[in-house]
Length: 73
Image (cartoon, rainbow, N blue to C red; front, side, top):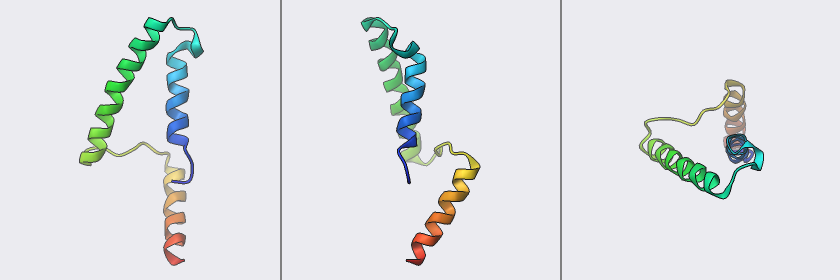
């Protein structure tokens, strides 16, 4: 991977769900617990090969080209 966009995307979505920091402590704990269960499910599905990570087609093409050029080196 070229960047940490997966982490940045997750952080952006979590901030949006958290109303950009306007949560009480108890609401934040509940949100993080929910997010932890979703993330663990996604990790399991990815490791089993049942699903793949979502990526725009333009970036998929770019990564394919980059991998092709890296293999030449």
